[in-house]
Length: 268
Length: 302
Image 1: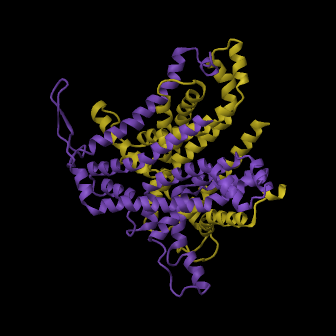
Image 2: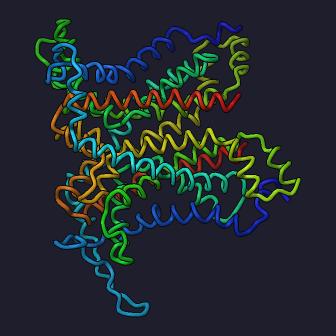
Image 3: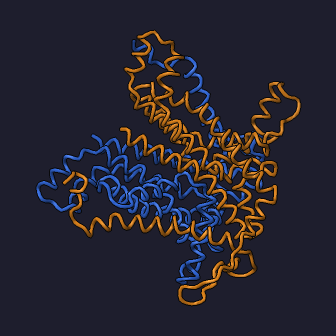
């Protein structure tokens, strides 16, 4: 009866359509980044001139550096806080406030960005009035905001890993008298390392990609890459943005291939 | 002593592990919503901060309330806001249905493939999610505009005589939201379909059920948690979506996320923007609470 489980014609054609739908726009974006003509949709011959212009665009490079800094910082913090939360939720059994904790860690996953952005800006403004900090809004306030919504994603990834790892090693170590902290660092941490890496990469990309929350929580001095891209594409298509998009897509591709290798190597 | 409690006999360490994430989320996630609520009762003014005080402290524990419901009154008397809310819910609901329509067969297909091919197909669903949201929405501008690829193909094929106004239309917004949220629908659907016991399907088929009957009576009910999770992950954030209606909808599509943005950034009316946000939050909390209950129930069933 195996044959019954093979995808029938309808499902196969629906899948082909869906993958074309997912990848068509991305492929067209990459294709037109090599277009000589400034009119993005008219083919004027092969050229890499938009790439060289991109690397001469100082404002864009500064914004990219700013974004990388924020993404690195917020991903690292989100993994630390998110891992603590995941350990509490999977290893501590029932404790008071567990349901509330699970709730506030799930809500940011679906909360519209305009809500997160506005409410967090109002927090920073009120904090400045009450405790005189933060005096300027910029990379630090954006990073705090990014940590807050990234934690939720880190928890999803790390929690599911913590649930699935074999507990007998932890139990054995505890039976032999090891302290819980030692058990965590020597046994649990190496077992969940691939999930920590995946969570970090996820938080990093989410931060690098965020426009709305950064726009709300940023100050006059700080412009991130998505903010710059947004103000440019608002005016219509721009081949430099196509070139930038192509580079980002290549980086993501490379990142996923490397992460896949690392995870597979860890499994063996 | 149960196995969960054993992990932390050490009281201080346990408090730290629970306390740090708790404190972070309370200060940076819950508290901001209380401040949002407070400022929604104040009034806009010129100065820093650009809103009036809601409470006046009279010393000790006594205070006077200065805030008012004027922002909410304004929201409910101006048609612009009410129709923006209604329109956002409608657009989010239709886009969710479209995601389900495209995503379900795809998740089903992936769950029936075995081995390396499945990993690859799954990877191909996740990959767009990792590439910039903004850039994926931007890609549609190039495809949809009047001298864009889609109009070019249709003109070349002789299906139309003059370019269609695809960009800056409600159609473009449905397309954009469906496109960018599709992975969020497929992944939970796949997770619930993958867990399904294949022998149930074989049993139904052996007992003579037609493929359609197997699907309706076995596959669909078993994948219901995935359908609900996927729909929530698309519907709720789509209500407040800003980037898609801004870049693809032009001035023709009214969505509440865009209204909030312009109240804040263009009119600089922070209290009114806060009131818009509070009403949006109330609309979202209803399905969220229902979902949370549903999840706890199904966890309890196990």
